[in-house]
Amino acid sequence: MRWTAALVVVASLAACGGDDGEPAAPVAAPGCATALNEDGSITATDAWGMADLATETPIGDDTVFDIGSTSKQMTATAVLLLAQRGELDLDASLRSYLADMPAWADGTTIEHLLHHTSGIPDYIGLLQQDLDERTTVADARAAIAAVDELEVVPGTEQAYSNSGYFLLSLVVEAVDGRTLAGYLADEVFGPADIDAVMDPVLVGRATSYTHGEDGYVVADSPWEQTGDGAVQTTASELAEWGSQYWEPTVGGEALLAARTERAVGGYGAGIVVTTDDDGTTVLSHSGAWGGFVADLVIVPEERRAAAVLCNVDDVDPTAVAERILERA
Image (cartoon, rainbow, N blue to C red):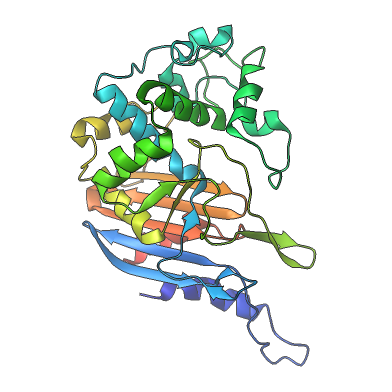
């Protein structure tokens, strides 16, 4: 199935005509990879554009992308597994796991972090550094620890903040001893049979781009934080992960219920829960980081999921995923 590429390429070629009215030669550009999971099987894939403009390496079904905030559902899975196994208390305070946090962390729970109701400012803004400048886990931790006052009383309002999921990566390490990346490899990706890794600066993935004055500009970011993002995988592997929402092999039905049924303001544990006009539940989470954009859209009742991963930020991955599901 190759129609998703046509939706983008036709529009691009129409805009590239020469001065004499004749079509110009296609210009090399970054692009996307897509995959459709139906009842646990990948039934359609597509790929277009370049994974690296400098080497003119095309995007293929095996191209690895940074999925940005789509990673939050994997972080939430690790947290919920630890809670399910009695190793972590969702109602416990953040400070009970991270003693270096300020006094406000006494009233901020793990549950608040999962549902973006902690009131902690986003560390991306706190660091005040460009995305092309290296920042470390220690930098982000120190910036959050230096916050004197929360934006709202924890649990009273919802405001999306990457700080919560970054802190969850530190909580997992404090509880288990393994880094979040190690925990996911052993306890989540392995059991789910998903080829993915949490590594914010993975060598070998696609190069990401944004538009500059003279064309595409490399937008890869060397920031080193995990938890709020940093999972690297292919479109097919991400689509396969969608099966966890109708046939959960990691944590079983109890974890799936914890992920979706305690949603606050439509936000579950790392997943957005919405309902179509016909009453069908749709789960999704988009991502955007350093030129990469992504989305995974799941319709559990129909046992279908569509993944869209791009290495350029001028594509709407959600719109593409929805079209894939509509036409399947």
